[in-house]
Amino acid sequence: MRYLHTMVRIGDIENSLAFYCDGLGLVELRRVDNEAGRFTLIFLASAQDIEKYNGPKQTLAAGLPMVELTHNWDETEYEGGRNFGHLAFQVDNIYKMCEHLISKGITINRPPRDGRMAFVRSPDGISVELLQKGDALAPAEPWASMSNNGQW
Image 1 (tube, rainbow, N blue to C red):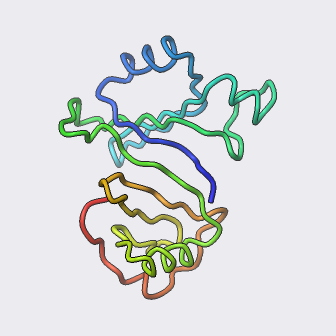
Image 2 (tube, helix red, strand yellow; image 1 turned 60 degrees about the vertical axis):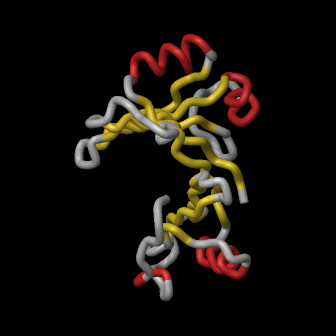
Image 3 (tube, rainbow, N blue to C red; image 1 turned 30 degrees about the vertical axis):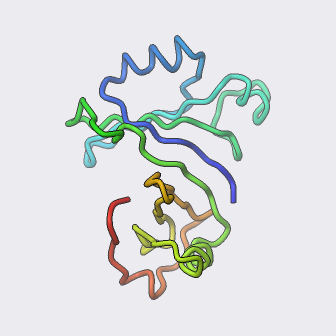
């Protein structure tokens, strides 16, 4: 398993970039505007981590730990900790990882129906995203027909 990023929901892109980039010194590496989903994703990393993983180029590199800022266009204020989104880890085989978690009594809140992504929650309610390394696996049972269970 490899740590990927931490997602934080933001209400205002410019104010957030002023804090994370101008204030903390993080570097914007990629921005994705999704009109259909009405959200923007902005991936940031520290200059020191960029140098460690990439050398002098500023790109997304394998293993580069990042902060993902998520701006939902229709939401500007978050209550009750909803601004913290999730931790994300890449796994070699998402189906085997989910089977392992179930064997440990852990609920799969969002099963990997697509062979690519699943969500679980920590005992304290922290959402954890699991992402398949490389291409998505072919849809398979019991995952393909499994419904969501609780919040993720």
